[in-house]
Amino acid sequence: MTANTEIWDKLKRVPPEHLKSFERAGGFKGTAIKPMWTIHRMTEVFGPVGKSWGIDEPVFQVVPGMDQEVMVYCTVSVWLAATHPDTFPPGRFHGVGGDKIVKYIKANERYNRPPRWENDDEAFKKAYTDALTNALKMLGAGADVHMGLWDGNKYVDEKPEAALEPAPKAEKPPPTYDRNPIVKGEFDRLQNGIRQIEQSGNVEDLALFWKNNAKTIAALPADWKTEIEAMKDEAKDNLKAKVAA
Image (cartoon, rainbow, N blue to C red; front, side, top):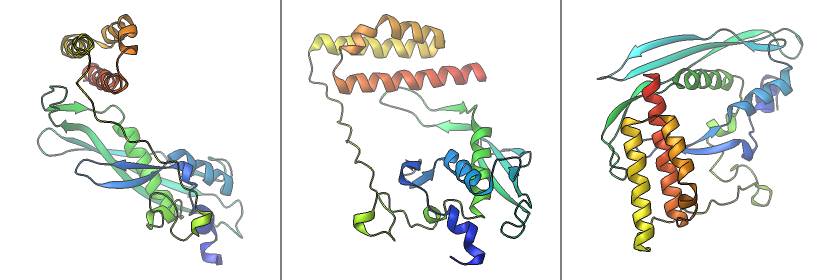
């Protein structure tokens, strides 16, 4: 640690429990830092937000993309107060983030869904979080992750015996379809019901359908139950998007 990297060194290391893996379309994989950890750590180092440090009002810009795609970009300014002038000089720095308000969704053959355009009612929030994270990088928040020192299980500069490795995730078994034909018939009926509600119903219809079939769903094999729950969640998101549109 040097005088110039004092703040950086206090913010750079993220506890493993506040990291999560992600995979984007196209196969890109990475590690994301939970935003609330960054804010909490800033509060530990500088004090309460709005007093010793804070964020100016964000500026949003909506930009049309290709075809029907619509993008939103956000710029934020983070400031530091001169509460400890000898240690933390006052200053202001910026970050930019973005997300898609309207995005193209590929066809889903598994659930027999056609390709479509969807609205994301949380796009502005995602763009803001992205911008704030990028701004706080300037101070060193989560720097070890951004510099590639986290390999997905541990920090590469730690000794193996000191590494904190998350518990391995159990692999999801592939769906099986060689079950009792009566159970298979109920599974098909549930799928068809969810599809029909998604096409011509609403979120309340979906909730009622799920409640009325709770016993049947609970009796499904584990892999089918997981699959039907995922289908229900996707249908719910699509119905909410229709209302927002």
